[in-house]
Length: 218
Image 1 (tube, rainbow, N blue to C red):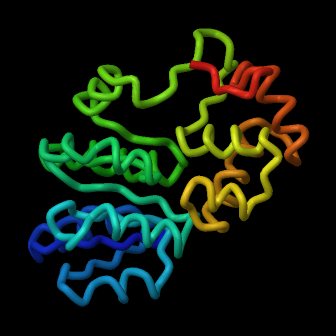
Image 2 (cartoon, helix red, strand yellow):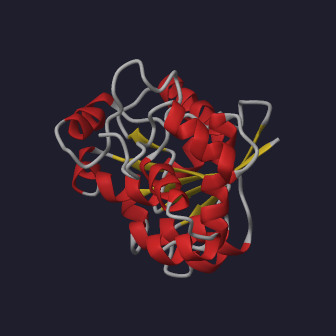
């Protein structure tokens, strides 16, 4: 059973999302009305997936950061309209799993949730075009990564790993919690199909994810 928390300041919208998702047999959904007292509730109970309405949060980026620090294995989805473009890259940087546009259909909404549960990042085409129009994210050369794709945060952790830093030093350097660094390392090991740091670095160089001169492939 996948436990999901929906945070929205519109009761009808929040209850509607809950009703849609609870039609899926393996999803257990809770909804809380966004208030000034929401923070403690959101952080004190652990959920597998969080659906956060952008307008419902006092400070969406800070709230998302706190959830990631307290529950690094959780998947966070941001529910918003076109206004998300102004903060999109910030949310990408801090590690959200995807974005849901308010205009999407019910089927698209459920597919987005399913993709996040399966550890697949979900980005609407309009936002994807924003990524393509910036040099903010690294782009790997064609046919060199053999299907392995690391997030920006995972690339940064991998680069720090090659510098010989321990988990706490990596956390300090990247302004993350130690638990979040451990989460990224676990993801890196899984994606590269390795068991330790040495194997991860060797595999990353082999797949051209990092170069021998200690820089990420651009």
